[in-house]
Image (tube, rainbow, N blue to C red; front, top):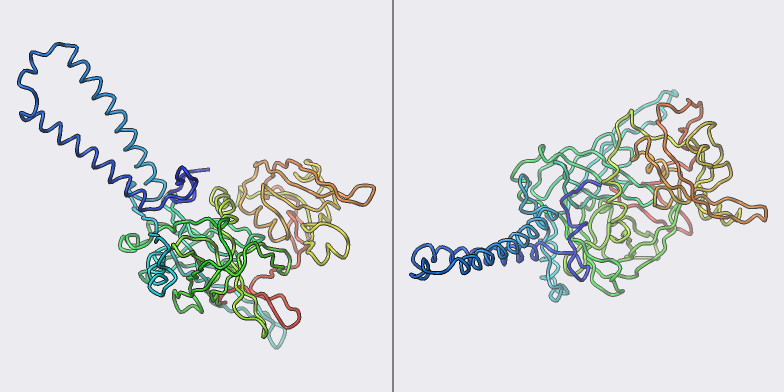
Length: 476
């Protein structure tokens, strides 16, 4: 994976916690003070500060002094390079675009309104609005097809930069099927954006913006979010949500962590999320859930709506999201002639179907294309795909989005559940070398040869039942 400047990788302290911008700056200041002190000592020696009888010293003395200087030079050089490496990984102090990470607080004062406002002020430079233009098709009065464009709004969080691109994490349902995207920054400026990669099962996406399209003044005002540790969350801790609520611009709501590791049954899959009573409204999707220090602990995604329920919003834990984000960044969307091909048609098996037919949730393989990479690897009709390339698979759309981020020729591990003679399912791990999509045989079905039969696009809607629904908080 190519290096990118952020605080996801290689920014850990000795105790495994993420380093903050303040820690990098403190290390740099300490190093500079040391270097400055010894530089002044050297200047004094060069201007009469040394011994007047230095010329009468033996060669051994000067050899000793020279050796000491060389050793110090190595130590100081290593220390300075280490600090510069850290700043590079955080997007600070590197050549070209300078990006700071967001400041954090001690958390001790964040129970008050002043504390919340400080957290919001520190984090706001890393929060963006995302606007998408979508094409809608409808049936006219006389049977003709009519199309119209609608605008949808959501939120995102700046998580790094790489090769002249600003990287932003958001929800998949914010960008899915968008004809075009634009990102709005803390100073009110907007820039066109594109999708780097998506994972619909995890409801995560990475959006990128060309730094060359951004004004220098905007780049000086934005920041990379500082990550927290969602595994350390406890019920009752303070939670702060920031996002583009209702498309009116960034707003802040405060509350508490109501529950951790809450299993939420969506339309097609089950997600393990953080529950909070901080208000998460339409347009907040993809925005930040912060702890009292201002560290990112979750990506806001969905709320529970019912006449009997109030204050039940959910966020994807950042520790769950990090490896997926990294994979989406690594697997940059391939060009058209590099698009990958698996060679199956399949159907989503949700929890309801799985319970009814006593089978695993995932993607049921209805058909395997003859001579395809799937057949070569040993995937058979009747298998249920549950993992693909190291991440779980629960829907057909999820499998397709994972495929869209990969290039032909890549080898991936595919975990399938296969029914044995006793009627139970056994796990098998197969290695598939993906083929070229352009080499796939054409099909007359509505789906693609990578697997097509599915329950359709379920994002932006709701899951009904007993007068209540889980709603994705996307202002579309």
